Image 1 (spheres, rainbow, N blue to C red):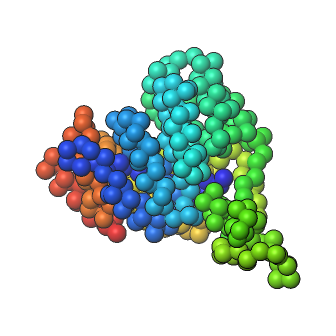
Image 2 (tube, rainbow, N blue to C red):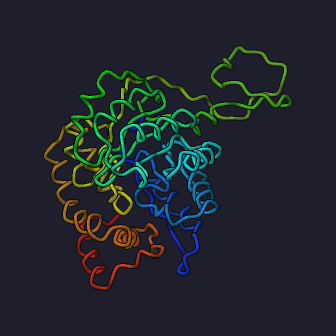
Length: 348
């Protein structure tokens, strides 16, 4: 699976009484699907996942992936304290058609030993049917040595690195050689795209690849009803590294990151994408200009106000944010006025 591009860590909408608001989650995913972002992370860093019970976790995962455009990479946050609990969420994500899972260091292992940390991630990678993306950030940081060890596991695709060590990680994992299936324009191919490229054969209950049905092929059953087959190729990827902060996006790209998971992309996906677009176009001046307008907003909203601030900023840009779930509390009137001003140049 290719991780190139901007991946949005979704917020989780709630009703004023704290119930999960699935309709607004669907609304948000539908809107993000119409932007140039590469994918979305459900129940990730912005998702308040620790406040959801098991039933709510499944409902949120199900609602989000059902509404996502087929070409968007969908990743599920599955981090739990225990291996078995994380695997239960991973199994749910597998059944719902997710493309991969995102896993950070659980609180119980913060400050723990290397052996326990490796055991946690390796045990999940061994048993999960979906590929795994690591997350490392201040407070949940993985050492470069641990990352290099885990990178050798065939099921560990890459890492979201929020501590600014992109170059070190790239150097430590340079020996890892992998390829990903991509489209003819080198975009990611998701499992949902592949599923729709398989055509049902009427009356048999079996499936054959559409592209295998040439113009002169004769079959003794009704013709397939699906659309044309998906043409793919492969791309060398190695161990894939994504930037994990908004303010450090451009620096991450300079150091070799394929993309980023900026928290501010939940409320300003276009503004975050434009930094990457400027960089890919070779216009570093434009990329710097685009990132400069994000820095002040990110430092205050993402860095200081957290989820409540991000949710209010989402409301300003047509993505439902609403109230956070307790113990988080809503932004104050003064904080909202400050966010209004910071987001003025980043309205959709």
